Length: 40
Image 1 (cartoon, rainbow, N blue to C red):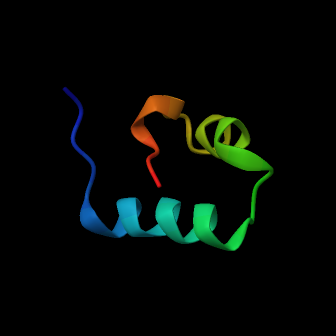
Image 2 (cartoon, rainbow, N blue to C red):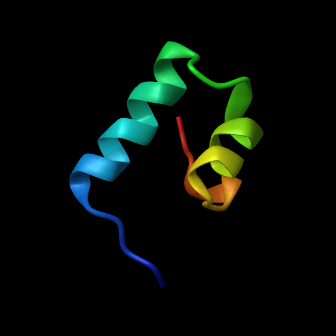
Image 3 (cartoon, one colour):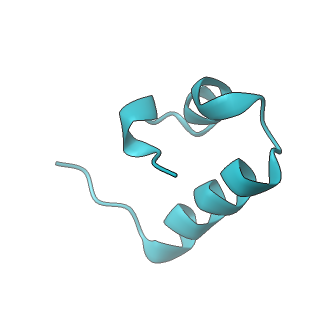
């Protein structure tokens, strides 16, 4: 299982919460991670 550093996790979460990307699918694609890794 791949582990991510806290700062990366926080950046993804911040982007998700502010709506920087058009939903979870777009955010996952932008960061190159599985959309199942992004929880709200």
